[in-house]
Length: 328
Image: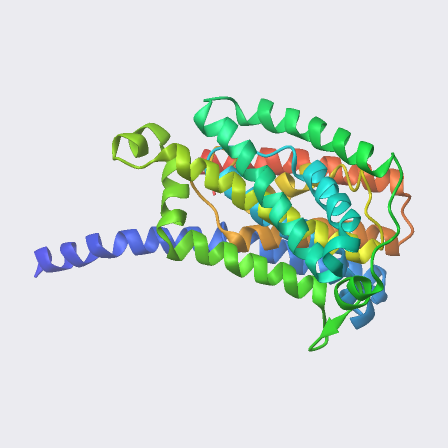
């Protein structure tokens, strides 16, 4: 009887540890969002109004789309610092080609162009054995320069009204179309990570690249595909942002790359790779979006908002260090 009880206790221990981690680490971000929203709602009741929540959903849509791709690079043990620049370039190329391909063809151009740039970046990183940090930093400069040359250094305001009306300010089932596109990208990312061989290899490469290579996996190919997907998400983000602001800007939201990294890490994705999921990306984007939105509502200067975002990025890195020490 004692042996049976001991065996039962032994089998239950992993489940208890998993439940303990779930009750704390997995719920800390939703809890923070709930507490923060409640405090801001007491200070400024308009924060939880439907009109403001609708506006907030549209605001975080481009960041959420981009953060999905950024999460793949981080989980695989890499990083992409070129996403904001490639997003700008994709938007410029797409809008310039509207006379040739039409407004809906421009959407395809932006997405495909982002994908191709991502594959080129991934090829250089994977097959030339170069640092993701250096390559993506260089690609950011190249993309920014080309976007400025093509746009002659000024925003292009010839965005078709169909795109602005349908995607930028359109609603479907009571929600902004841009936010629904972001959720669709989030679900696609979750499916790829959790339900495909590609996703399993992304985690494996981030956890132990050498062991994955020795097991027979074509690490170079899957690394290139990771950056290709990141580029695709960047192209989709350019569709959302360009439609929302009504212009293709050669230098659009230059700090969005850092925000996408902060959103992923703040939500719970480890900077050293190998862990995390799309729900963590959603948490991080909500926190950053709610922070900026609430500070605007209460009348805080944009200068202090930049300061707040910087502090959040630092806190995100510190939280990542704490998670890796398994304090949570």
